[in-house]
Image (tube, rainbow, N blue to C red):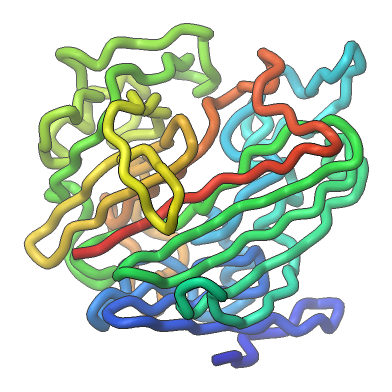
Length: 339
């Protein structure tokens, strides 16, 4: 189902597309290929806004596709084959989530269709990032597919380039498994298959180049525990997490014919969400304050939601990692499965 959601200042129309299958339905906006709603058994589980203007002016990457590079890059540049390409420092000293005008601010093309193999409803979102976009080399053609199958939301990512570049795409949905109007994230029981986290400078949140063993720290979720149990002890000077968890890759599950890491399970009395991904890492961001614009008519509260962003490790381009070359296909997938 396609409905008009709003109009950009230049007159371009932004549409909302809704697909559903069984107990799950999703609404995706052509602005940012944004997951605006995700319903399980009729309960909306993700933060977001009810107007285009709020998405344009309130930030936070609510449910958007983030790119060209999700998370932080240091130094104000990326270097490829000895050539430096300046990129914006839009988060203190860091380049964050693709810069000042990332993929979350694009108007994407969306086609509503069905999966040829399984018949599941899906949305195919496409856009082209031009050579030099936010400083990155190469024309990047991107396809993001949302599909609802087997009581899960599948998000598939593909990209190709005509010049060597760096790519790291993710979805930035904020979850509350009680429902966006109820409770907060602190009682969510979380288990993460992770032995190490990326060490970061507490001031800049940029990686130090080291990894930390989670044993005996606030980051140890190898045994299920409430998200809020240790969230004042992250060492970041904030209440909550803004940390990259390096997945151990020990637990695998095949979904839609793709072998994935079982990244985490998140459980409340109402439901359990299992996060599967082909990516090696997952950023957890729960340090979200109260105030600001309401979420679809619900006042924002401290500890209201939490993001699980599957990704490459932050600042990987500074090590020459996460590179995409011409002739290659960036191809990853993440699944949010409910029961």
